[in-house]
Length: 105
Image: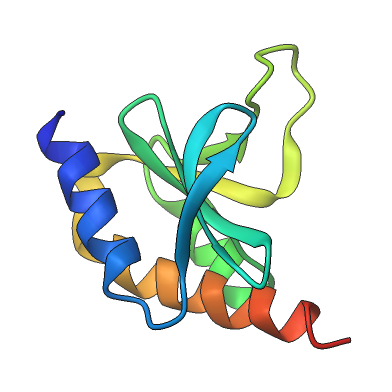
């Protein structure tokens, strides 16, 4: 297991009520059966909206998540480099809050 993956797991496990799972065959964390973050290419990916989405996407090397590699990115999902690991916890918390709000509708 890489240092990046260990850090990803520690963040997810420290979010109350999150559960480890899989999304597109990739490790992810879910709330109420809905993914809010995952791990892909040694980077963390977050489902975000609004200002937090813009902030994450503005970081160098950040990009919209394209798990298929076929230039069909997922608009709400932002892949953030390990270089910005200090932001990962904040983005994971925002993603968790966003997705848990969706699941209550």
